[in-house]
Length: 472
Image (cartoon, rainbow, N blue to C red; front, top):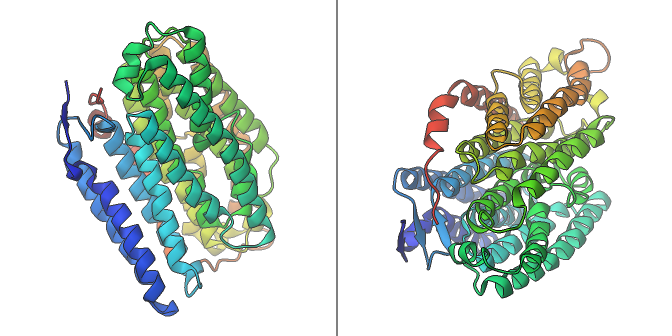
């Protein structure tokens, strides 16, 4: 049994991020335009402090806080470190393009609030808290998608908002139905109540709940917003949309499968396995002939959700599921953000051909891009390679060998569209790609590529840390 307490320090990373966002909002009203970068610096300090606090909490036994509504366990702590680290990178690539922007401080505050929503989703162990976290993760992201107030950004924000509002209503409806079936909203209580609850009622509620969680994850069939929202947003916002909300959503997804629906009559594993297969396959098909780099990465992230759903499908059926999911989340986040850091470093390069000659002009930047793209494929010794081995092993161990075989076939197929980007990048003929995104974006691209390789080489010790029990 885990210890229950009401200590606010158990939520220290979340409290720090919320306090920094509120203080940043106040500072942004008083600071002159030339000094609003201070709000971004404050946000970065909050993220670093939160990572330290999450690392300290990771060494403690799993516990719950506030009436068992929030879990503090390996799933939560790993998600904290990944989300806060990803937020740091998003802030880093944003400083240069937002310099002296009239709404610079607002951007940093919105990024923090979106990250806070992802953190709350990851630790939520109550359906009402999950719904509140969904809204907190969504509303700032809608604003960020249209932050530039241009045509593509406005269209991106509108599509993102309309689909999010629709699926959010379905999610709240599902939560209402699940409350009627289980007479409560806490995960442990629902896990016991659903054993004897009417199967049709539980199934209807679960489908509504899935709609909202899949929207935040960007998985099929709630994926339609992803390509347009990512392509229409600025590069830093696109980086955020394709990573941070997914971490919180997939952690919440895993917790629902392991605690709430594990013992119900609902065929939860089979349902998630079908969603995983559809996401990886349709994401790959959509990416095959894309020319816009952000749109290609958008379809790529849909396919990656398919791989990430594999350990979710076998939650409670395989001892490898938890560590496979958490490791893959960390590997995907750093690798995907590394690719977007290169995009941020080349603000004038929008299509694959615009990257032609990059290896000659910026060899380190080209090498970082190649490492990240091959990493997304799952090429050794990158971290995603080890992550895919782990999720394949978890799928086999959980009785879903067919899903692992399909994932392997999709991995091979994905090499095609990543090579379509790599080939012009390493080509020494034709027009040369133009840089101009700032030194910070280039340095962060180098760092992300290095971390992706380092995490792959040091995967054994990291996996051991991620295998602790979750709170119930």
